[in-house]
Length: 365
Image (cartoon, rainbow, N blue to C red; front, side, top):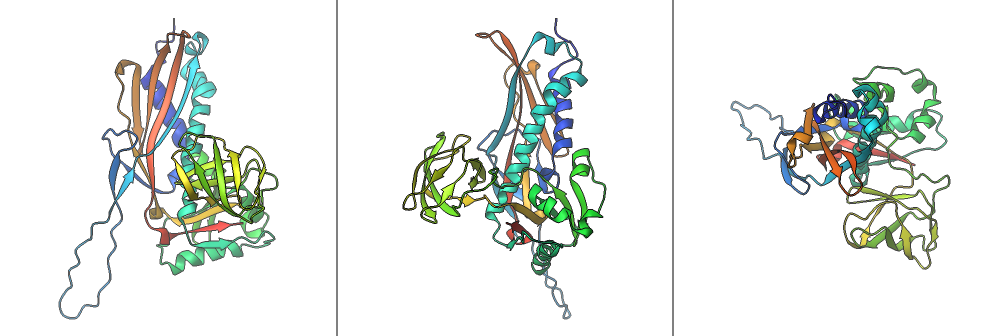
């Protein structure tokens, strides 16, 4: 007999807690949440922060009407972790069940959300080229200067370093002495302190090649059909450029990693395998090549994470939704009659939108 206390409500509450404690980037951006149920593909309207102009007063006021500062965001991300559970698993108490199953599942979802947010570097045009021989924090200072010149507010500025950049700058005297406390366990562990007006963190989901030595291709276009795990590359720069297993590119906000080496011939690669299914059909679509290390400096209002709860399926007694602080997790119990196994599904849906590109700058190299 399974543990009567291991209910969908209990698991959903624990899953939400684990998810919140494992998010880094998602806790640093603008959040928009509504309790209205949504499904993947829905378009929701998000209100952007209103801006005003300080007018010279010359005897009478010039009343400003706030413009429509809303933006349409597609809820196009659906992240799911489903796993089978044994009778022994269902006898565990919630602490053991969380440690063995819920925590690994929700860490995977948290990393996916953070990674998707950091993929917005592909939409940010302002860039600082990193000095790979840096012995000081001049690169970080340049990021702050860029935000200063764009008049980004001084409060709620954030810098999220990729692991390579963190350890490059961590050897400098200034950064090695900085220590501060964050708001949650993972955020505390990720926080490096305030540098040049920016609260600074490390997030391992930042875009960069996983190859020891990345390929030489710096630009290319992608052709492929939705659902495919192999794509064609055209317009490769240089024309005999290479890609390495672990190199990645970003297309429409999704990140893909190559799983095998390949070399271009006259600027083309006929077939290159990728690690997951292509999310759409493309014909010579320009990809953002993300083999270099990427970090991102931004004001909170530069990027939005838009979340909505998923509707409960039929048989709601075997499912539950828990939400807090602008994010919700759905838990569904299932049973596969063919294999006679119980399953647990944990999923979230969300959309991502760059609200103000001028309040963000990336560090590349």
